[in-house]
Length: 106
Image 1 (cartoon, helix red, strand yellow):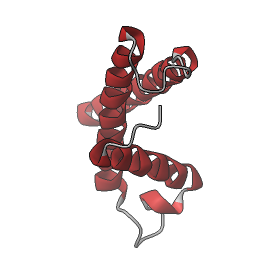
Image 2 (cartoon, one colour; image 1 turned 180 degrees about the vertical axis):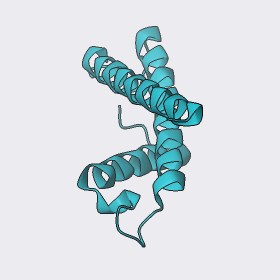
Image 3 (cartoon, helix red, strand yellow; image 1 turned 180 degrees about the horizontal axis):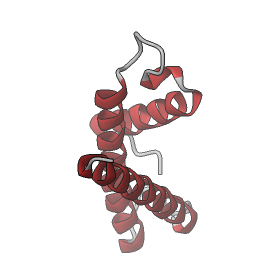
């Protein structure tokens, strides 16, 4: 096998583990968020909001990279034709909409 193929496999594996860790971090942030402080007046919620904002951008980059690699919709094996990717795309899109229009749902 070519060296490039080995590097691609290694990076692909690293990338999957990295994204999995980011999903776990996001879940942890959601779990420890104080939902009684909906206006994020406490420092903890302010920090958690910033972390989840950064994670949303990371997930958007992941989504964009997958779309660039797989194609979006028009051929077999494209990004949107996979059910999990469709859910992923929907969640990322909603997260970005929340960030850009400034909706405070927390």
